[in-house]
Every structure is written in C-alpha cells, then in structure tokens.
Image 1 (cartoon, rainbow, N blue to C red):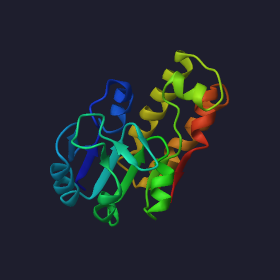
Image 2: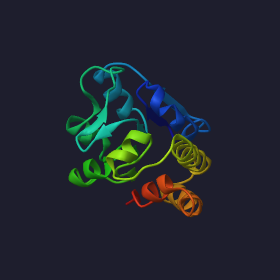
Image 3: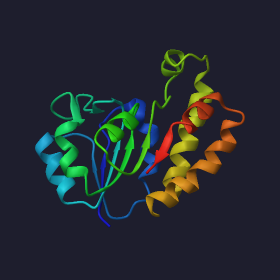
Length: 176
C-alpha cells in the first residue's frame, strides 16, 4: 500500500512524525504546490493529513500555496482513499463531507489550546500527551485503520487517567 503523508512544515507539529516514521512505502510532503499535492493523492492508497487546521481543512502554514493544503476542493480525491485526518476540528470536516477514516476533533497540542478549551495545564502534560499519542498511533499505523484506532485508544485512555490533556483528547479521536 502506497501511503502519502501531508504534514506541512511546522515545528509546533513535529511531535507527529513518529506516526509515520515506520511506514515503509511512503511519500512525505512538507511543502509544495496544491497541484503537487493533488497529483500525489491520486497516486497513493492511504493518505495521512496532519498539522494545524480548522473545520474548513488542513492549514498550509505557508509550506504550501494557498491558505489550506486540504479543503473542500480536495474532497473528491479523498473519497475512495484510506484517510487519517489529524488536525483541530478535522471531525467537522470529515462529517460535513461524509468522509471515512481515523480522525480527530479539537486536539489540544499546545498549552494555549488548553486555555482556549477551558482548562489550565503545563507544557509537561501537553508534551506527554502529544508524544504518547504519536508513539502509539505510529506503532499501529501499518495495520488497518480500525486496528490502528483499536491499538491506540486503550493505551491513550490509560494515560488519560492522570493527564488532563490526554483525557480531553482521547474523547475526540474517532474512527468510522
């Protein structure tokens, strides 16, 4: 299975790299043009999209042309692909366009996001949650997406018992 990883170059989301470090047949796009992204999507079976985003899509963060690297125009290319959507409020994007895959809702990956979501935390708790999430999803990502989800969630739920960031996030990770 050919896997495309779309992960806009952004130091604040580098913690996500372990998710795809062990994928063998992969292409990683961290910058480029919308045309390059669309052509790459057509040529791959599984698409992992991760970084910062909104209900409207995955932000380009200046690494790709335009405001979004993944948006409504990309949806027809994703409809028949195995997809992983890891960005804040990806759930709203996935549900609005009736897409399938593994995806996140509002995902706290920074202290400022925790404050925005109504709870106070520290960088240690955020880092622990981020690193744990990426490690365990990366350990399971070469399986089916259902198996990846099932491999991640029980472990992340254990961390959530003592880590309020993980407790918040684990309630917002979905598979359909």
